[in-house]
Length: 528
Image 1: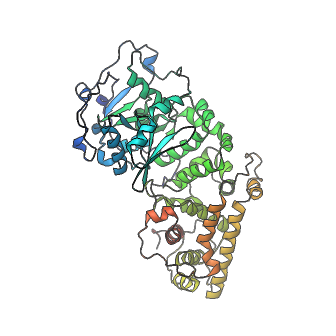
Image 2: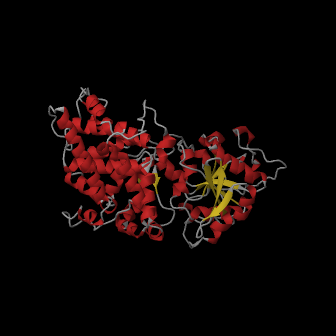
Image 3: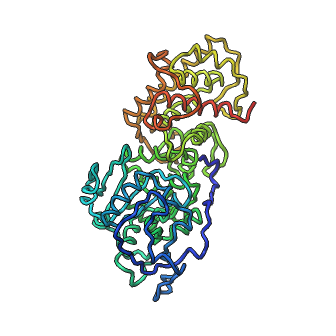
């Protein structure tokens, strides 16, 4: 999942043949006596209107409108999308609402990911049912949110989010004067779908998928931007980011995860409005940072945050490290911090995230090494003590048998020395104290505000978004090094990661994964 440089444009691995693109004709929604389920692809309800001509253009489209995104519909099967790609809990909710006669669609990033043959992080459903009707349709369902209410439908241990066209229409505040190519004479269903897609942040998220008719609706030019590997705002970027500055962080996250680039206008306003993210609640910033760093695209996210001047606002300590390393905004070179997160990325994915304490711990660990470079053997022994829950004698015994060469390109690693066991133990303890001290500094506003003080051109930031609970969790991961073997703790055996436990913050999984990341960084597999 890691992207090694900033010059990435990973083109999607699918073919969009020109005949698939066509303007909308009026679609007839046939009523059926019995609604079949989505358990297998062949049991979809066929929409007769989707058969026939591959292309049909609306009449009376002005010359000006012809330059705007054309409304398109695509056959999902032609794009290789099968119902088996939709999670079982989502299918149950879709079927439950469809059986009751409501129209249901998948919307947003999940449609984009299905087209790109990626595993969606989650699935969002929108329906013609009112929210109270959704609640009546499922035994375990509640309405959440005041400003933008949605339904949480509980299917086993999974929560499926369902929104309603009626509530999304009520919150619709954008002027319909944006010239986004609404053809004259569209029917009411087209208009309702179009209006909902207009509320989306980026064109590639403005897609709507009817899995029963097997149609993907594209009102915003999202398919073309997927083809071009571009992140582009639905409405003018300056307006979009001023409307919701969290979209700046979402843009970074999406581009990093997909390997997409930004449209020129979108890139311009990400950079020029970067300081506006300080208006966000700290909890929202933490959520967005967790999406960037815990889901398999951390290295690319850090590079993009640095490129667009956001890193010195969000993580000034790490920005100062980049500056001291001479890393330019568009630099393709790596360093130890980027290598640590690159190795973390190799173990994670959008459907296999880690608990946030892991990436916070890696940041603190690296800062401690940057402040005081260590012998590679000390770093190895430290990670082994973390892994086994505090048995330092066992860790030292294993570390002293390492015969691989370390990565000599990292300034955080000093020249190896022939350390006596007791000296090695003492230095491991010193590193543990340094990690704890660094973690405290990362949650101290005054210290954070001074991180970039040597660079007066950098924006001032004393932002600390790591809450107390997360800080304490990171402390718990590392405290075994200083306090000794923990009673009852059993170190993980084998290399297989239990991703469910890792996401929940299991100590054994967190410590195991941390040790793997450190070892893969200090002693790369391609070295002997």
